[in-house]
View 1 (cartoon, rainbow, N blue to C red):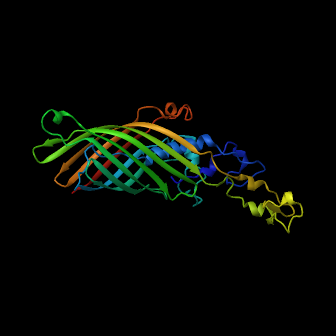
View 2 (view 1 turned 180 degrees about the vertical axis):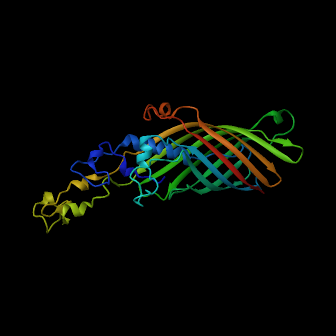
View 3 (view 1 turned 90 degrees about the vertical axis):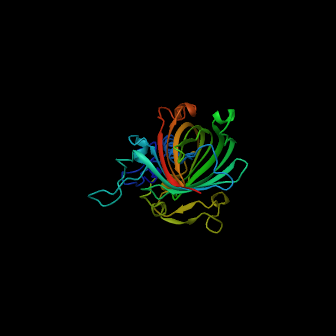
Length: 324
């Protein structure tokens, strides 16, 4: 499920099935790239998987988390834009990913630390199986109301505002970053004086930023070889000053066409709105929990029609760890 965005072109005739250049310049399919970024952005977004109450000034929590996000595995852009397995007969990577994963997995280690005055920070580091990508980021939470258990305030839930950022590395083709702001309400329930069950509900607004590097849309063709490259146009090689711009000089029988197949996609700037519902159980130091996240506004509506027909995604997350 690594990226293969060089396949996302509007005119497939610009290249052969093996990725070799033809006489037509490749035009990047910016719409397909935008939809691919939208899918992966939701998969790496902060989960916000903790109640509104902080760990407190002396509190420290370390957790292992697994998040699973539904993907549009039947979409054409997903099949073209991601790498599949190895062909049984050829022994080489397939040209199209015929079976993209239905869920993208993200396994992480997260550390939470409270600093008093209702402030808590956390760091998270993880990896996406079946890809070369790793993800990391940080969160900041401010508890607006927490800790009241007696009297009238004891009936009120804990409330907090939080935000975070996640980014991935390991893919030379693009940079993907997701930031979010969220609000959460929770209420701890003591069970038999030995454990605490804490349900929570929250709202998340997230921003997705995706930018591609320079993509070679005909990777099976060496542009310099097709040009019979002799060097850059510069003083001492070309007499005409207008031709001394550093552009490639082709030898006899060579052509510049394949140099035009190196391009970047348009930058992607998207937003999503999700709701999340979670539940934690703590017994002494042990903490286990789960959460579900889902879109409350379709990606299409949230982005003024830029993702027409795109469906929402659902994420599930599980965690286990210790609170000291």
